[in-house]
Structure formats: C-alpha cells, structure tokens
Image 1 (tube, rainbow, N blue to C red):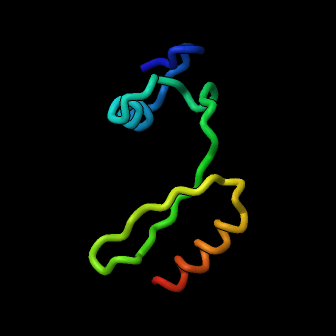
Image 2 (cartoon, rainbow, N blue to C red):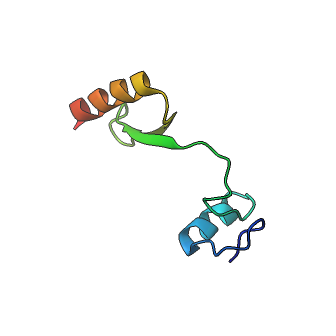
Amino acid sequence: MNCIYCKNCVGIDRYEFLVETNRKIICKECSVEKRAVGYMNFDHKTAPSLVMVPSNAKETIRILERANRRAR
C-alpha cells in the first residue's frame, strides 16, 4: 500500500495497524505524530497494562524505567 501524500510504499505491519485503528495510510516520513515510549505496568497480578509516554518526558521515563526494573 502507498502513502496518501508521497505515494511511497508503507510497510505491511504499519498498514495493518493503521487500518485496524481507522487512521489514514501515511508513511513514517509524512507522519506528524510525536514519538512515544511504552512501558509495561505490572500493578495487577494477572494482567499488565501498557503505559505510553511522550519521548521528551525525561523524568517520567526515568521513573518508569526504575519501576519496570523493580517489577521484574
């Protein structure tokens, strides 16, 4: 599949994700979404949850990295 702006090929994994989340088919180069970092939150004993944090939130990332190391 091709990007709607630049007509470059969009990878199959990215295409499937964009279709499943009802987003426009846009390649990484044309995307305006900011990068994010994901961490697993092990608060519950049966199912962890995913915590998404903007990549420029350095202090929050530091705290999550410490909590993630302790939880394992």
